[in-house]
Amino acid sequence: MSMGVFATHDVIIKLLGAHYPSLQVLFFSSLLSFPLVSLILMQERTPGTLRPNRPGWVALRAVCAMGSGICAFYAFSVLPLAQVYAILFSTPLLITLLSIPILGERVGIHRWLAVALGLCGVMIVLRPGGQTLEFGHLAALLAALCSATAGVVTRKLGGSERPLVLLMWPMLGNLLITGAGLSIAYTPMQLPHLAMAGMIAVLGLTGGFLSIQAYRVGEAAIVAPMQYSQIIWATIYGWFIFGESLDRPTVIGAGVIISSGLYIVWRESSRGAGSNRPVIASRLRPDTVTTPKSTLLQRILTGRAGSHH
View 1 (cartoon, rainbow, N blue to C red):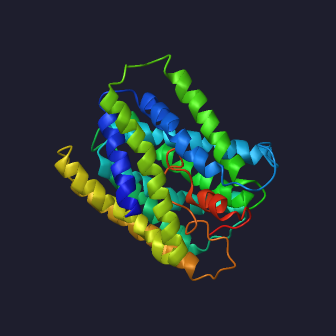
View 2 (view 1 turned 45 degrees about the vertical axis):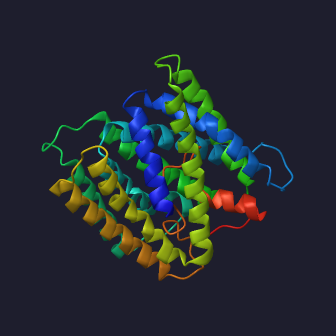
């Protein structure tokens, strides 16, 4: 259900992206999410300020969270849904690579082979030379890279930062950047479209809460692979709403990427609870204001600033 809600969230982004600049869509959906997010932040009981304990890492995470949201909104606006998801599915592969320098993880030959295979799958989807590569493809890749970096840095920070700090800095920075973007390109929004921007905010937080419930009642190794079901929703929505059809390279490439991602999840789950297990603990969703990281929401709502999946 969570992945279905997130897919609907992305469909609305694509619908609005046909009429308005992606930065404008992100700005208004982020702005309209503030009342809902504020209700969540009021549950934060950990004393402290917005001053981070580790400002360098918090700044890096904030920049990556903002970058992933901006790039993902643009990619969804200009590319077929299934193609965007297939590229975003490379996030666990990038997390595996980034966990080496940032978390000090040791990656064995099996996971290296899985990463190499998954990156080959990305090339199959992009098929350079077989199609005209657009800026949307680069944006989707950057969204995956930024999302992976933000996820690994969140694991690096652990419980050393208040969840409020990790949520607020990307939110404020996102509004400043996208708000400044309105001076470059702005199209007056019709009231129904403004309501759709509000629905993006509602659906993003709803998907986050459903994800929290899934991780509360299920094993992470079982719940994490469910994220790949987004390709099913993308196929259904793309066919009925946008007239999109899955081409063979996208199907083959997505299959390769998903297979390698599932193998990495299986390898991490078999290593025991004492491991960092960054892939299992991370979501494939780009970390944006409308879809804040589920682990942070859970830590706020449960009042356990130091707990995590």
